[in-house]
Amino acid sequence: MEEFLCTEDLCRHFGGVMATNKVCIDIEANGLRSIIGPNGAGKTTFINVVTGRLPASSGKVTFRGRDITNKPTHKLVKMGICRTFQITSIFQNLTVFENVRIAKQARLGGSLRVFSARKSLKAVTEQTWAILERLELQDLADQPAKNLAYGDQRVLEVAIALAGEPQILFLDEPTAGMSPAETQHISELIRGLADEISVVLVEHDMDLVMSISDVISVLHYGSIIAEGKPEEIQNNEMVREAYLGKEE
Ligand SMILES: Nc1ncnc2c1ncn2[C@@H]1O[C@H](COP(=O)(O)OP(=O)(O)OP(=O)(O)O)[C@@H](O)[C@H]1O
Ligand SMILES: [Mg+2]
Image 1: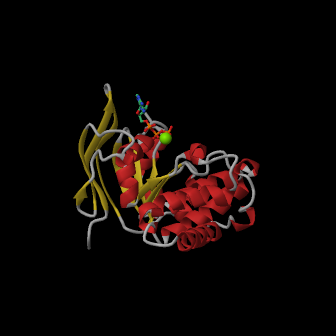
Image 2 (image 1 turned 90 degrees about the vertical axis):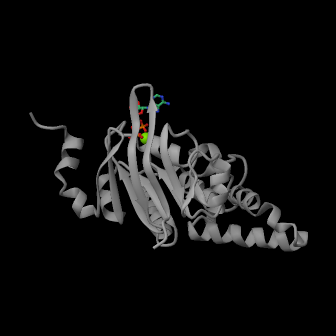
Image 3 (image 1 turned 60 degrees about the vertical axis):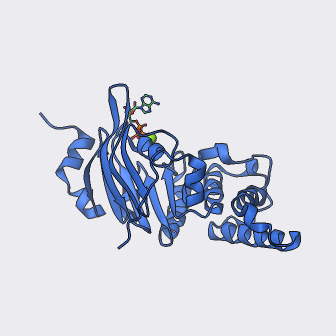
């Protein structure tokens, strides 16, 4: 099987803190990989390094066999490696439709030049609707983003990321601050996405992680201490100790 996204001994330190410590991970081309671990375990740092927001201190990231270590974010996005950027990526005064359309236009960009203006507009419009429907945002299409409930804003971020046609999408705590109903809704959407593309989820809600993940990787002090299916992780003694602290 062809390799998809892998890291080899990936490291990132901040002064003496090994935020990412020799991480070797092998992520599948589809499915839902969760990355869990106590606060400060290095989950966000790992995503930042892999998606080009922070340079690695050492080690390697490969995508489909190509070395992508320390490539700039915009190049990674073009290759299909995306993450959500929280509320900052939303234009609050534009409608839901316009927000996704702009992202879609940016993605299609130059490739539209060969078509007439009318044909390009049609392609962008159709693909924008397809994303809105996939994320069940179609009824909110005409609403300015600022009118959206918090949970719907976060779904809109995912829609904007999807407009970039990712092959792998990193989501760092997408349910943070959501109500139980909003959490339930976005988790169903995320599960649906993971059947088509690769989704890497950082999430603190253990019930959610255990119910929707295909594979879970556990980080502790920057290193992966366990990896496996939800039931394997749930029964793993090292994982319990990492979360609960070792009993003296
Ligand atoms: N920009 C930075 N400068 C210095 N230290 C940092 C920086 N970013 C992260 N760290 C440190 O690196 C370690 C890992 O942090 P990181 O944010 O990756 O953890 P996390 O697993 O995402 O935690 P949380 O669950 O709280 O979001 C922590 O000790 C943190 O203090
Ligand atoms: Mg974090």
